[in-house]
Image (cartoon, rainbow, N blue to C red; front, side, top):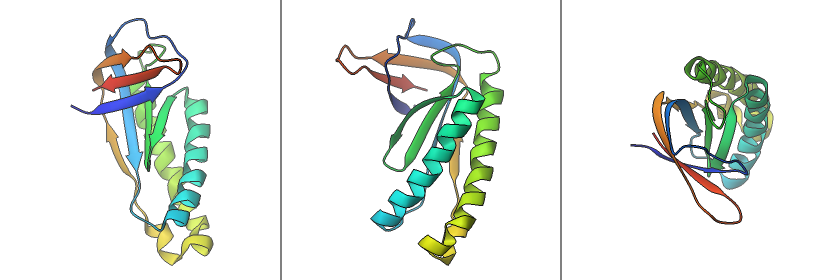
Length: 138
């Protein structure tokens, strides 16, 4: 079971959702300033893709990018959307890492993106804190 934490100002109507597709990304180990520059660049690009694909960005946890299709608004095509979102992020990362080789070193273009997808039942737990925290169990 994967535990994913979401933070957002949304209301989740039901704690158990039969159809949603969360995903997460992470990167390899780099120097802290290089990781920051790399992730800032990649996550901004992923955010733009998420907006275009109507994917909900859950949050970034360290160097892990977490997003979900099918939440907070249910959609029948959540799995297809998440697969396409993942493909788009992979393609954009390949382009951006080639461009970042000058600033981050010649091996930057060789970085790989590990993608994990889940499609099916997701349980959502939310807190009652002023800043709502939502946890996905998939």
